[in-house]
Length: 270
Image 1 (cartoon, helix red, strand yellow):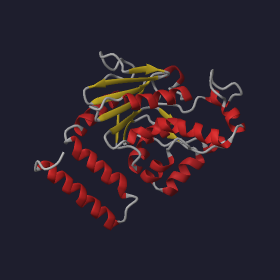
Image 2 (image 1 turned 120 degrees about the vertical axis):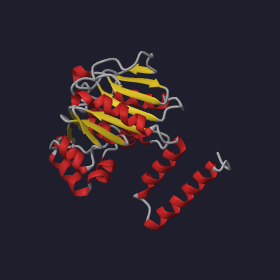
Image 3 (image 1 turned 90 degrees about the vertical axis):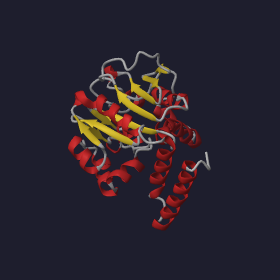
Image 4 (image 1 turned 60 degrees about the horizontal axis):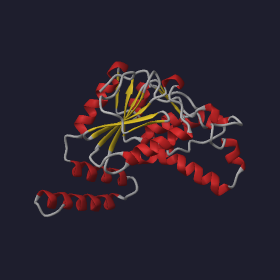
């Protein structure tokens, strides 16, 4: 895999627009945030491009790697969103706040779609995170199943400090990973979480030197591809549902999943 500032692949991108590039090599897709001059700050146009990237994935893709060009993964929401003018061709956030409740709710739901598809049962997503991952950038990293981080990573959830809340699907995985008390403290204070704490608390699966980040993501993608796809899908579904099930319900789910796998291996199922 290429370094953070070099081209990803000789193959033409499947999508390349509004700060998002999608490339596909066989069973691995790479989604790259491509506006390093603005530290990959996010906007509604970028969110729509991320949603489009998810919809454009070929059925052959099993692993998706998310990365950002430059020194920062993503410094969060572009502050232009809070100006009276907002972004060209977009309603400003202030205008949305003054509008109808159903329109505001539908608009936020549309923005959230950029953050939801990374946990699809048929994929495993890996965020390769370096430098700042702030606010929406932190939530985008949390949207993925797994996170590999560079040793210079700085996570922060700054929404509460701005009088807002994290609303791009980040609260559920954050609480699941670090627990309620630590999640509240991280969000309410807006403080930075560095690499050592991220690894210790479960935010990061692996910490590596910055110049090894892409190679580590490539190695993890290869390891994830080693097991049969259907077995990974069944296992992911079991783990995703475990929190919402009782111990006995999880035992039942395990038996049902294993029965399906055994029948497949015996040539009795799809």
